[in-house]
Length: 310
Image (tube, rainbow, N blue to C red):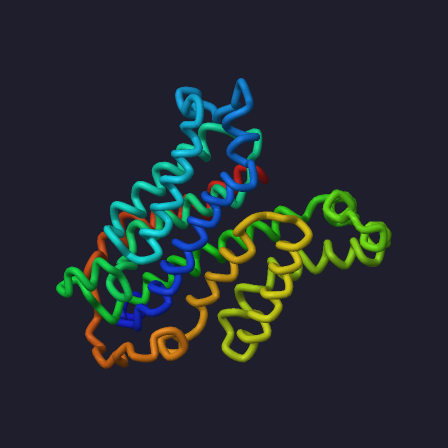
């Protein structure tokens, strides 16, 4: 097991994910300004409900929050191109945490997941290839990473889908009430509204959601079902994007797929000129991050949601 965790693999999946993530961070934050989310949630309200213990975090006065989100958008672009990556990713994580904790009137669990992923990415060597940092400082340029770098991302998304499945086992979901109400609120066209009220349709959506969340990770991990699972993910997340209007999350969720395919395949698709990995010596660099941060982190991630069910 230890040898598998530290085995060298092509770092293409992590590099691709960094580029996708940076672009999505920029879209999320610039989009929050352009769609009026910042205005309606952080500028206009005379009072915001901060998380307990975070009352000292308050929106900046005047138009300060527009600059705040614009700064996050710029940082997202810097993450994408890999410029001063640690600083860019670190500052974005801090600023995003500030937004997350300073208000809960517009709460979305996707915001929490994004915060966790940003924290994980801050600790991973995601700037070692296809980045300005690597171009300016060839000493940090690398074509490989230890396998655990991919597994921490897989573990994080697996925990998300596992508890998403568990959370759906309550009467309001199982009898279709939640999905019917959600679809009726999301649809405007008469035909779609009529469809949303059909029992067979909202019950199908309810149980398809349970099946998807419960099976998607095993199906992505298994080679023979991986492509089918990817296509199912496309349908599922695009449907959610169109009907629920949940911002970047569908595309954010899809971007994790790069960690499930063989790294060499990702290299051939996205970085055709990248050298093939031939070194088989274990990579023990930054192993303390795995031992002393990620292992305790995932123990907490696995146990903390259980408090709701105890």
